[in-house]
Length: 230
Image 1 (spheres, rainbow, N blue to C red):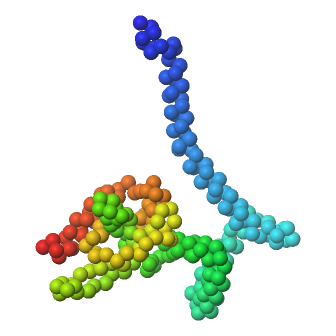
Image 2 (cartoon, rainbow, N blue to C red):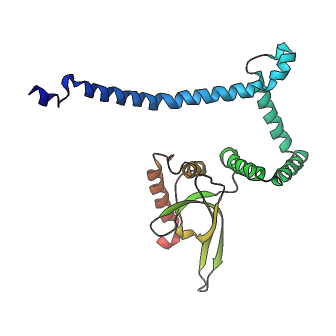
């Protein structure tokens, strides 16, 4: 009876070991992202703050923690201000042309630039909205981004709405396919462009928890606005 109650494991030690292992793994899951994030931010802070280290070696008065970060922020602000005027825009065009002629560097620069525009710019003219289409075959869906829309009349005289669609690849969303398809063949995702890009980059690992609810609401709104439903 004693053997059956303990499942052949006297003292219940295996159960305690399983409990401790599960709690230890839970602690790692909670603690590891926090520690790594703080460590990464500290490394970035130390690297950025070290910009003035050569000057601080000559002028000890400049050896103030955080002064290098402030200097970098002011430099970024100054570049943003200068890029808003005519002279600054011309300089940026010349810089982009020079980088575009360097093999490998041009691809890296273009990728970083496009990613920065997607995540940082307030005005996004490249992507209008995130949608889903049945691709590469019926029953399989892919995430795409509408870049523009246009209309034409078919042979029956019926006006049709078409969309220009960019279909990105994973995990690099700067490469992909350009598709033209009827707007009626797209399904609005109900999420922001940033959230859709994160889904593409992560291969679907990063997905908003409320996306199904927003997707359903977006589909209902699309059905109400679609004149074909009347």
